[in-house]
Image (cartoon, rainbow, N blue to C red; front, side, top):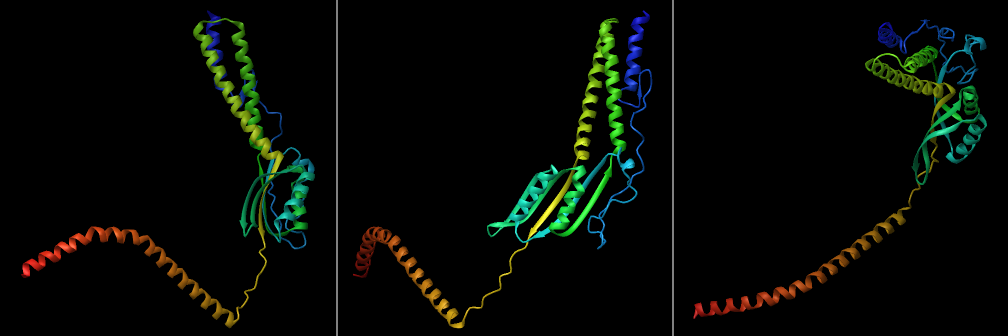
Length: 291
């Protein structure tokens, strides 16, 4: 009797603690250290330091080591041609271990006039790639953003750990094989729910790991169009062009009329055959009336 009652009680305790801030047998304390104060990282616009600047003194190695940071940048550049940029960019990304995730190209007069690229770079090479862009390209705009997700990382990891602890305890209860059928079904339902929440938390962790491990650069490329001055046409050439254009229009009109007459000729014959008897009959009737 006591054993049968213990199973629902354990189920209620497990349900209250599943994927929360506690675990059976004591309160849960995540192994990771508490997140340090957030420090933002923005692009500098000082002429002496360049657009990207240098890492500030507020981010020593021992402070940033345990932080989970998502780094993104919006970079706008102008180039004379797209082809050389594409080749040099691919070489730089290959050296940095990055890749081009998305590409949108706009063509003008048979060549690329504008491009929008999404670059993914390992986080530790993020500053190197931006430095290469500053040194080799005409950078018009650069904005760097850093989001600290350490707290989210620790929270999601704690949910995963607590969920797995709860899962193990529920599996142990099922393995004992005691309790009524109703109790067993209740434990199985709770186990399915806990496993679903574990999978959801692990999916969120994979997204965070991808965003933290690979920085993102949105690169906007504008290709300079060569200036072509307008060429003034001589007066006599303009007159000749107007005259030839008028003659061409006259010839085209004459051709059109000829085609129209040729198309109407068969219909004229048919109408003549049909209307000729009617006209003759009409004349006879008029003559009789007058006589």
